[in-house]
Length: 160
Image (cartoon, rainbow, N blue to C red; front, side):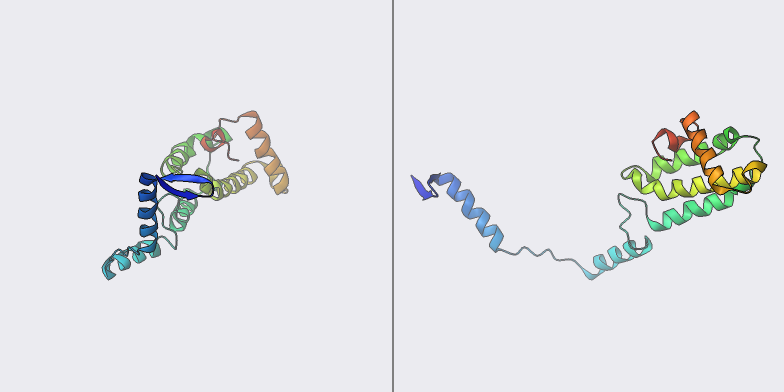
């Protein structure tokens, strides 16, 4: 029949499975990994500044996006309204979200905060009434987001 354990009877076929599991726990299965494989994995992690970069945006990619924003010189765009700036930035933001935000989109939040900061700087240079107060400019951008929630691509996704 089987072995009685804590008031239950264990059937023979269950006992065989149990002994197989116990044997697996007791055995150590070491997989031989060559030094070259370890070195390649180390180089890959090191090239991504410490993160694996498989399912999240790496630090070097964040730096690359920040450099691209600096290159675009958002503060000095000559569009007459925020709508023109949004149309100009739309393909960049959409591409970044589609590529880097594939698995963990919340990792893009620091990038969107940087973009918001640059939009505020654009508004301070564009509109005289916001040159003196950065808080008024942030409030203006907040009002624009409330009135036109679909203006920027990342606003449609729920980011600020």
